[in-house]
Image (cartoon, rainbow, N blue to C red; front, side, top):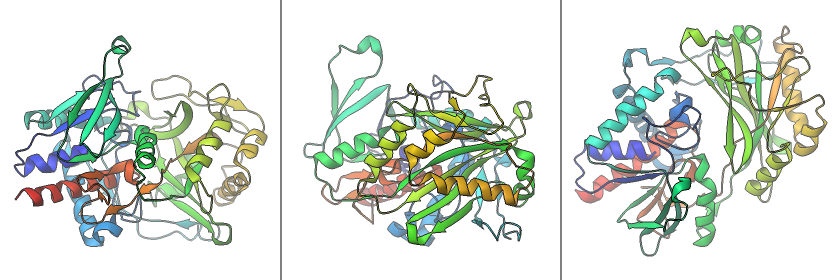
Amino acid sequence: ANVNAATKLIDNGFDGKITIIDMGKNPYDRKYSEVMEGFLGAGGWSDGKLTYHTSIGGQLSKYCGEEKAMELFDQVIANFKRFHPKPEEVQCSDPQAEPDFIKPYFGLRLFPVWHVGTDYLHEIGKNWYDFLVEGGVEFIWEQKVSDINFRHNEITFKSVKPEFANMDNDSLFYDTLIFGVGKSGIDFGKKLAEQYKLPTEPKPVQIGVRFEAPQKHFQKLIDVSYDFKLYRKYEDKGVSLRSFCTNNNAAYVAVEETYGDHSYNGHAKKDESFRNDMTNFGILMEVQGISKPFEWARDVVKKLQIDGTGLYYSPTRKPSTTSEGENVSAIQVDRLHEISKAMQPYFPYVYDFINDMKKVFPTLKDDWGIYVPEVKYLSPEPLVDYTNLALTKYPNVHFVGDALSARGITVSGAQGTYVAESILGKTK
């Protein structure tokens, strides 16, 4: 979100000072495994799929309308092509027809996806970073923001490096603040919302598992929709399920650590040398009606840990390896009891989803495994001015990205661009 905002400002001759504070490292020093902090966030470092529909990844169109939302998406996609070493390889998949073999058991959500290519993300990051530095953006790396005083426009931060643990905090003042935290910063956003009594809108729970199996079982669906989205709704129970973030060919499970707990995601390499003929995707439940959804999700995730590590279950398989050839960090359990107990009464919906996939894809049988949990923490969403995403109580503070319940690269980048346009409008 912040990177796209800064790009929009520079492209339009903004003459103010732009400073970006990040607790991660710049793209030249950032390790591949450092997914949760750093330039371009998690999705821009390890995924590289740009969803191209307003029903995916948040409610951007509720702020600015459908036509404007798609225009903002186009600007984000153009930026990824602009800094891509081989922009001609950025391709869009746009499946249209829902196959009949899916219909008895699942809906299939079809929408366009731009495929940037995971193997190019780090080069894109370096090119993009160089552009911003040349444009005058100041980056303050490996610094964790500990406090923001919305009343006095002051940010307090401190180095995350152990050798500077005893150093005093630094601070700076701002005229306009874009609060664009990723997943690792949403707890901080929630703290600020409580501290300043910001009016918020609670978001539903999103929790589930990362499913993995040999690609051959799903090939007939992959041929129709590479990044397929199976879904199912139980309206009377307030529960809906969907598969999402599908990875194929060279698909690897990725470990995430949020709030000190293990959770799982996935990514896919583009280079044929990494090909493992595996498919992985999330099976995520959205649960309505839980009074404190954020706290509930945190509690469930803690229950799904053994010695701080997430769980793996399979009738026949063992945990796989990462793209670096190391074993995926997971504790294998031989029964579903631990998982079911922690996620009750909701895990049966996930298990039914898997059993129905076995009917749709009959070769699948018991040749699958699940990494538990996969969770999308959606903190209560602060109420904002729809014209510029500014807090209703503090009009010079704009919430974007995960701080405003965005899920994914395209929506986050579009939100940042939208805010930058409003800033440019004020300076003209």
